[in-house]
Length: 469
Ligand code: FAD
Image 1 (spheres, helix red, strand yellow):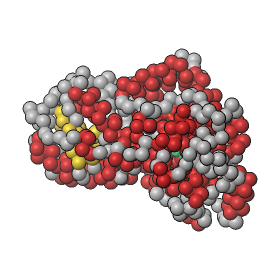
Image 2 (cartoon, protein in one colour; image 1 turned 90 degrees about the vertical axis):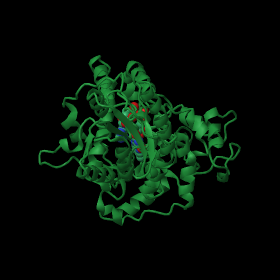
Image 3 (cartoon, protein in one colour; image 1 turned 135 degrees about the horizontal axis):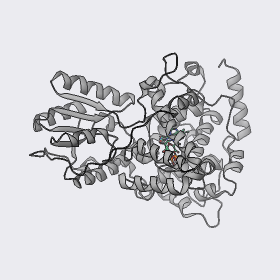
Image 4 (cartoon, rainbow, N blue to C red; image 1 turned 30 degrees about the horizontal axis):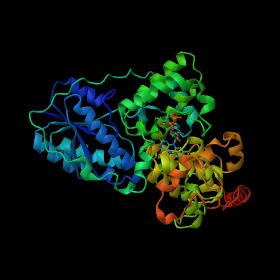
């Protein structure tokens, strides 16, 4: 009887443990992707990017004699219907760790198991399952560095090769058509523009990894902090949809380290930040919804999305160049450099004293590499409300950061058109991507700061001081 292989954020053939197990069982395999209650909750850019990934992955499966069956509806009901349609006795999937997926998967597993179906989740999204890393006292880690030390010397299994074929069932069940799902519907504004910056699929990710490990990883230590340079791997969009396995990245990094490329150590440690984010999210699901430090509930955040400051921040017209360049980069490319993410998050939560959830949700709307764990951790870390957070008194200075990390102004000049005689083409693309009702033009005057670094810093520190953090 066939195996239903339920794909979610694991859109690859190589190093896919569940697929490997299904392929080597010799049984017919029916790959399925469900537009379910979790996907329903995705915002504009992540949903659009997921749609591109699903379309590409369907072609990959066709290349090994298989198909991707598409169905829409609540996951449990869809799987039950597919079991009835196909006579499948087994449902396997790659494990997920965010609260919404865990809720869904637990219900699927217990209901199907109760009906005599073998329903199982198989690891594949992480290097280390979150519950396998424990402190000496038997708890979970709340700080990155000891977590990293605890896992650094662990063995990581070698990667698995992609199956060359997948046994088809005697008859394929019906499938929806991807276009009918309109996964890009909320991206009507700038999808064509963002498309030029997207790198979809497993082969693209592998090429990227190979090029990065060959050419750039050695200098990663210095280059990774300069947003005007292409010094990082740009693999986050592929990692988030599982178009490449973190294990493949890890081994490429470790090989580069063995080859004497010093930056590789730092790069592997970044992969471990991703692990740490999932470790935290698994052990404290409130990371995505509430202040991780409960004493922060008393902090007087601005929570009104309609505030003029919030609007200016989203639109990249705060008058603070580093912030505005970064917000525009995100709108046009669906990505933002890590240094810039920290700066815009610090400016929103500290200078503007706006709730980190406002920022987290806007990133979720715009990022093609949106990741539930890394995004929430990044925001709470920047705001000071999270575990392993920046201390409240560290308020990034977006002006001196510019002098340090964008000395030649390559980054701000690439993204801000106003005031330039001959603006960079990417800076102009921003005006084609944004909605008309933002009423912005490259011929406008560049705005004065809505809140200067000095004023914002003083106000934030005074507020923190009045409280007992
Ligand atoms: P590289 O520098 O090449 O690093 C390799 C990989 O390591 C990345 O692809 C990513 O998977 C992982 N990684 C690197 N830095 C971090 C980090 N600080 N935390 C967790 N994992 C990391 N990353 C996302 O993938 N999705 C998000 O939604 C996201 N939101 C963020 C929000 C804020 C406020 C902050 C401060 C950071 C956020 N990050 C997020 C982390 C980081 O900015 C990105 O992973 C990184 O910029 C991606 O670029 P890259 O692939 O070139 O990374």
